[in-house]
Length: 252
Image 1 (cartoon, one colour):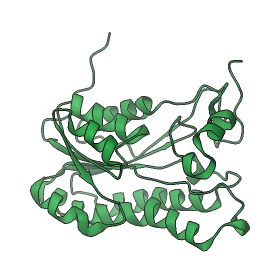
Image 2 (tube, rainbow, N blue to C red):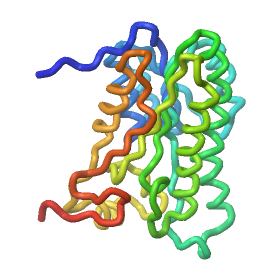
Image 3 (cartoon, rainbow, N blue to C red):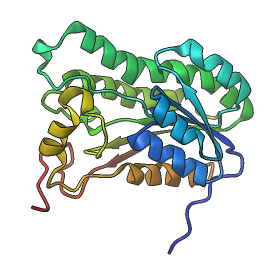
Image 4 (cartoon, rainbow, N blue to C red):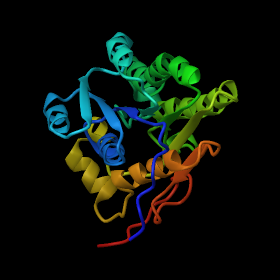
């Protein structure tokens, strides 16, 4: 069995948003197992209590839109790795049928919150001369998906932001990586569809990417030598066409 990737020695502390389930939780555990101190940010007290019981994990109950909530935490912990994972798909309705509040909600959580948190973390990374910023994007930000006009727009914003941020950080030693997956088996569709409906329509009979797969990719990018920056990882289930236009069932 191959050895797990080894994280460069200068990385000691990571912060992960949306840490209580799915990709976020898998990333928290992977980084913890790699030897980092991990700050897990989420809203569910029960899920956070479970993470808090694990050695090497500190939890913060906060809404990512509340930028003030992070100031005290960032003052105590020198965050070397930031994983902007928290995201929401509040509806799968056609754009013309969406409530204005849903538009605001998705942009506030999916785009504005990662930018504000990154703005708080980056100056200290630049001062140290190293750091790694991860953004969990989506194939919906790279190609059109029905019922995801606003969600896709928010993720497209993340994608372009990553490219532009990398330009601003050239020479600083701070790396920027976007991970843009196709269908991952998470609770993203819970709000829009309900878990039972999401399972029946999106997952039953399909072989999806699992959250642990994304955590493995993230750890691999983090573990590369400092002079190597993986700018974007686009990853799809083997049974899903690039762009997400078509996915086939692989089991019955």
